[in-house]
Image (cartoon, rainbow, N blue to C red; front, side, top):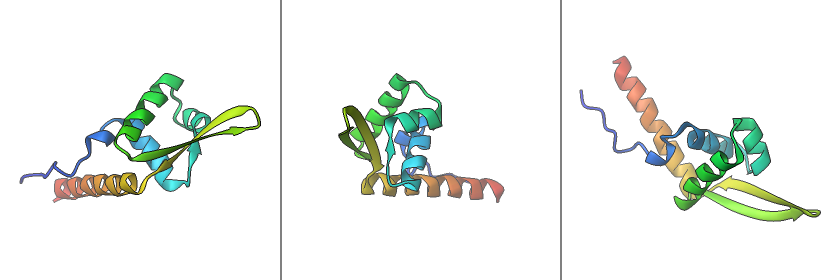
Length: 100
């Protein structure tokens, strides 16, 4: 039995990027510090994974100030949500094929 791997998205191969997209698809937006705390990652690690998702245009970034403090919020883009759903469907199909 041949398993089609073409629908898997390399952007989601890393568990942190998969977790980021899971959070952003389930929520309207999330700020940097809340993501960092939730995922228990370092600033640099989170920033590099967010940059990779931004490069793919899977997330959008909104920078603003709350008082004098900078605040960066991330949202899943339409393209990102679609790619994430296709990736999850591919995972589900893989699991179904393995059970058969």
